Length: 231
Image (tube, rainbow, N blue to C red):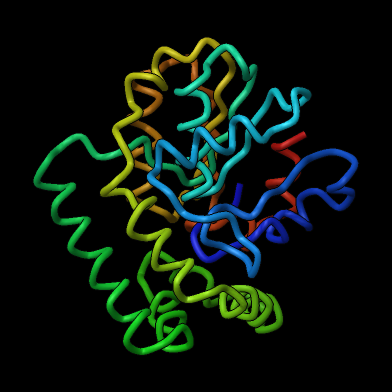
C-alpha cells in the first residue's frame, strides 16, 4: 500500500513482476476511479474484506504503512507478516492530534483553493522530502506526474479522513500482534527513525532495518535495496 499522493504503480521497481508476486492497490481517494473515502476504520474494514483469502502479508509505506497497521489490528490472526516502511502507529496525545488536524486542514484548504499543481509543488518542498533533491530529474518528474493525476476531491477527502489526526492509536495492537513485523526507515529521516526505535522498544521482536543515507521514501530513493528486504 502506497503513501499519500502515491499509487499502486509506485511499487513497480520493487516488484517487477507485480501481478505474479504481489497485489498493489490504490488507496481510497487515490486514482481516477478510486474507492470512496470513508472513516479510517471503515476504509480498513472495506480493504480487509476485499482482499483475496490468499493474502496473508501486508506491506505499506507511510500512509500505506498506517493502513497496514490498521489491517493487522482489525484482524491479527489473518496475517502472518507485516512490513512497515516509514510508518507511524498513531498519535496518543490529544493536543498533538488537534495540532495535526489543523495542519491537515490547512493543506486541504490550499488543495481546494489553489488547485493540485500548487499543492503538489508545496507538498514536495517539505523538509521531510529534502533528500529527494539529489535524485535524477526523470524520477522526480515521474513521481510528480502520478501525483498530478489524482482527483483534488479524492486527495482532500483522504487527508480529512485518513490523516494522522483521524487515525486511532495503534501502538497497543502493534505490540500485541503475534505475527512477524519488519520496520524499514531511512537513516536520514530523523523523525521517523525515532518512531521506529520507539516501536522496537515497545515491541522488541520487531525487525528494524535502517537504510544509510536514505530519507522518508525508500521506494523512490533506493528501490533495489528495498526490494531485497521485501523478498
